[in-house]
Structures are given as structure tokens and as C-alpha cells.
Image (cartoon, rainbow, N blue to C red; front, side, top):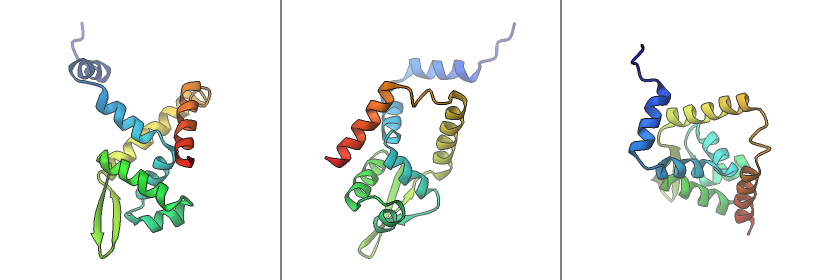
Length: 132
């Protein structure tokens, strides 16, 4: 009989030992398409808000709000240089790992997420909040 602990067993133990609010908060922070776009762009290096608005075609207020969320979640940091703030990922390797894992999982599940009514509603709600 094997007595080793699998990664899944270890994860179940962690879930039982801790709250799921922090992981759920992380996934909520990553759930907005504009925030994902900003995160992906920051993988190339640090940028100012004006750079992100030009490169991504998003409004300055949208970029600023999303960067504030990402900074509050500890995913992005900023440093002041003169009157400008430069934004960078706090842990680019880990962010790349998470985004890569999401891509791998999506490749395995096909279009199932696109067919999920809850996921579509959450994305539409996030998009509507940005417009309104």
C-alpha cells in the first residue's frame, strides 16, 4: 500500500485548513478581461499608465482603476519617477505560471467556459461596470 500524499491530497488538506476567501479574491482580480490584458502587457516590463492606454487602447480611467485593483491585490507595484508612476508585476514568474496554467486548462476543457452562463454573466457585469 502506498502512503505518499499526492498534490491533490495536499491541496484538499490546505482547503480544509484555511479559508478560500484569499484564492477567490485572486481569481476575482484575474476575472476581468481588461485586467488580464494589463497583466499580460506588464509581463513585457514596467509601463506608465499613458503607455498602457496607448498600447492597449483602453481609457486612462479604466487603466488606472484596474491598476489600483491589481496593486491592492499585491499583483502590481508602482514606483514614482518625477510626476509619473511606473507599474510592474510584483512576481512576474508566478504571474506567468498562473496565466500559463489557465491557458493549459482552457486547452484541455475546450469551449466549456464559453458555454458557462455564470462565467459569461460575470464578464458582462464587469464590462458593464466599466462602461457605466
